[in-house]
Image 1 (spheres, rainbow, N blue to C red):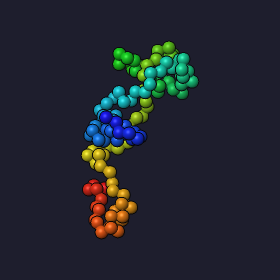
Image 2: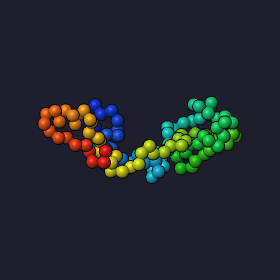
Image 3: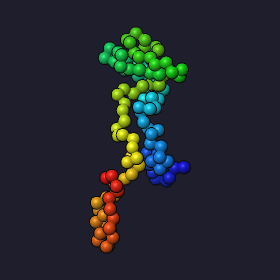
Image 4: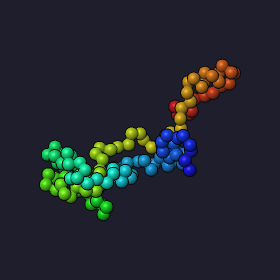
Amino acid sequence: MEFVFEHTRLLDLKRWKKLTNMNFSTNPDYFLGPWVNLPVELPSYLTAANVNRVRVKKEDGTIVTYNGTNASAMVGYWMVENASNRNAFTDRSYLSPVGQSQIVQYSEKGYKLTQTTGW
């Protein structure tokens, strides 16, 4: 279920405790981009500077790396270069810090609001 006005899927993944679904190191298919036909759609990428850098993955799982002569074979899922996780996937990823202004507001009304453990 999606909540109205949530701007990213990240909040759903946190709610369902499924952030590990975004882990590049355990889900290699996350390195895949859209299906592309490079010779037709992006011929500017098939240059000498991109030899051994540009890769696509075929539906059967075969990975094709551009070698300067195989432009016609460069049709498949775009493979993202140098993708990595931004943060470690720990239980802390599911928590959020309490804002300093909220702590002050509560204090002014006589309540003690403490920071989330671990922040």
